Length: 383
Image 1: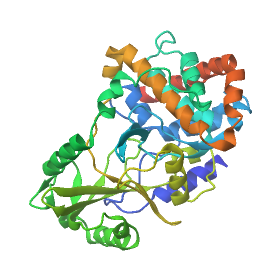
Image 2: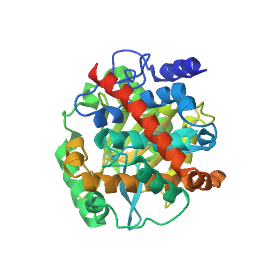
Image 3: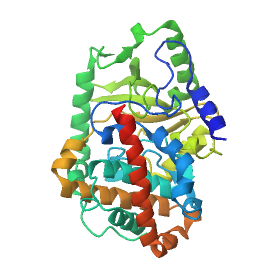
């Protein structure tokens, strides 16, 4: 079964030819490990496929069937930068910001995916204990309130006003464009440089998917393609529009192509891509979807639409290592929020009770699971 799922996953990514639509490397190869430079934390952020395939082979040996029996919509690639605040109406709301690998799967493994990324930075249980992370996660699942303030490392992101966002967004657009056109930089493939085949594909997608979702009243100034090298979504084409309504009203909108999520390496997906991403958006954005964000597509093809807004978080292993208390606080908070989103899925009403009644056992099993996985990940990273 796993081999079949893997073949289907790889086939869906093969868009053919050495062009902007080259196949994603994120889930290619027997062990599905993407080599990266830098810290193990950064490597794990690029290797969701490896985690889910390894879990498919080993979770049954390390966790009980009951632990793995609580299913729902998982984030799939939970790490510290895949959650951030967006503006929903007048409120800054903390949401999942990357749905590439989200889908149907075991909820507890979703928690362990995040625990593994966190423990890759704080390797000692004394610095970041599995028990405390599980306690924060369980509190969220059970619908309890967060006991403290927002983590210090998120305060700047949470405090961004609509006015500040508009100013910073305009500045970002100005840095990326000249005379109504995208600049040729940072790997962006502008319209005039695309192969005719790429232009035709862009136009076909525009007519079928994109045009109806572009903000009303804006003129299309330019189009471009961006294909990111490496990373968890490396190779996935992103279709960019530079739009203008007036001198002070401009947008850069991206439609990011979605393929089979990493979680499919362990759990067959029953929903189509567009059904999956719509369900994930509902589960992880309970206060609604921000302006110009959201799923676009049909049963054949799905995209995640989003404006290219400025980011107010920049996390890395060095920052976390130098600020262990702030890092632990942030990790506990994200574990709590992940539990909160899992707990909102009503079909898992007994999940919180199970976590509480088996807390000690689950904490011990979590520590063993992550120790085993990180040992394999470190070996992969060295090679």
